Image 1 (tube, rainbow over the protein chains, first blue to last red):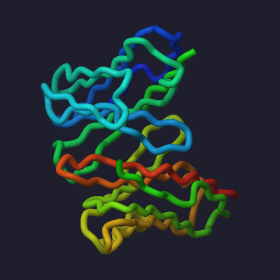
Image 2: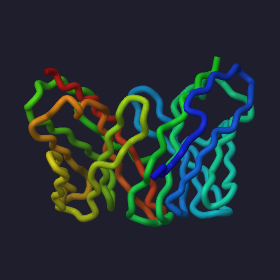
Image 3: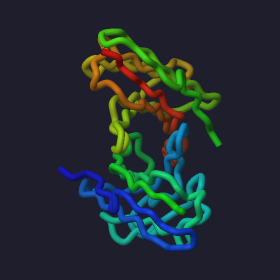
Length: 114
Length: 111
């Protein structure tokens, strides 16, 4: 009953380093999402994948890239990390893209950029 | 983009008291969701509301979808220590059913 699994749970990077955050879901969901959460704010959408083979920008995509590797996996890449990208990153999935069904979230990756 | 105003930002209550929090928006949503986030974890769905006027309960939690489709509230009755956490409202709208989150209500339950 893993649901949405994110790795790593914690990471510290230096400015300019690159990193890929991994996300996998075992619920056979079609849609997957990446959010960031900053203090005092709700979650903001970075990128999403409506279905395998497609990706689209969300509200705050600058500085990030994504890959929908297969139906289960959706990765988020920081090519050149900046201190402004220090945040908690959450991956989520949902049965279908244009669905009223709620999104299910992983436990997050806590990322610090020095 | 769309914005949700969630209030209050934080609450300190005595164990056993009832709690109420709400979200309002200038935009219409077709689904309202309430999530709880514990420290170090991701948001967990508490209640989903799909119809204007809908009132739904989940144990000690009750939530309502406002009839204008621009607001929702969450009530917690007889609070207990494990209710501590951050509560988020979220609205879904548009053909893509994108989620817009409120900024959260931090709940502290005092013994």
